Amino acid sequence: MGAEGALALSAEDLHHLRDVLRLAPGDEIVAVGADGAAALVRLTAVGAEGASGVALGNVDAPRIPRVWLVQGLAKGEKMDLVVRMATELGCERIVPLMTSRSVVRLDAGKAAARVDRWERIAAGAAKQAQLTRVPEVAALADVSGLMGAVAGAALVLVAWEDAAGAPGIAATITDAALSADAAVAIVVGPEGGFAAEEVSVLVAQGAQVVSLGDTVLRTETAGVVATALALAARGGLGGA
View 1 (tube, helix red, strand yellow):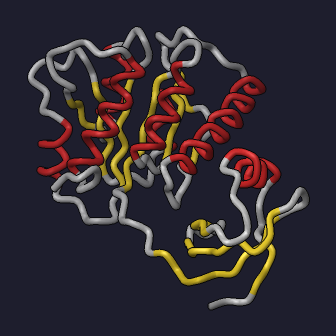
View 2 (cartoon, rainbow, N blue to C red; view 1 turned 90 degrees about the vertical axis):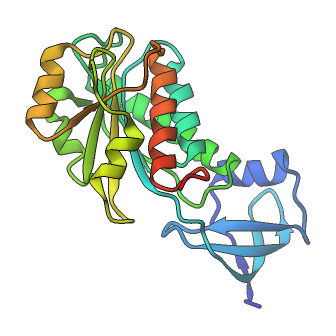
């Protein structure tokens, strides 16, 4: 058993622990450090200024496949919903994407403010889902610079509703025979979908077109479904 020490909590985390969960000395929590390491901690003090506890031992984090979602900007609170649900599923990275058909147009200042908002939403969703990692919300990208924004992905898949005869996500991932630690990026368009020219640009740079089936999904539905399919194909969500 480790020695008692103060927990490095933000004001928001302390409020959540004390006022929302109403935890008290003697309760046990899983604390996650900035490096992603998790430990079981028994609280010894909870107050207005902070909390302290004793580490009881390390907690092994479950292996979650590395799936990134590139989501075309959507109207209203749809992006908030996508960020929250993709985080709950276990998405590792979320890249907001501006396309020619995006109804939402953001300048640099508004884009930075939205990214900050989505980071907070992701952090809250990760806590709710008891995840040991919070997905990175990347800076706003456009189609011309997208492949640079997902350069670390071993496979980039573009879900396009006009892709006649395109394979599904699971089959494409299986055929790629990726290593266990490889990242897969899924690209989903906004309400109006992608223009054919945009898909051509991405394919010319190495992306592959996939289909989400015969039904036409809303962009916020498509982003969540594509993330879930990719995670399951990579062994997450109870997949093989």
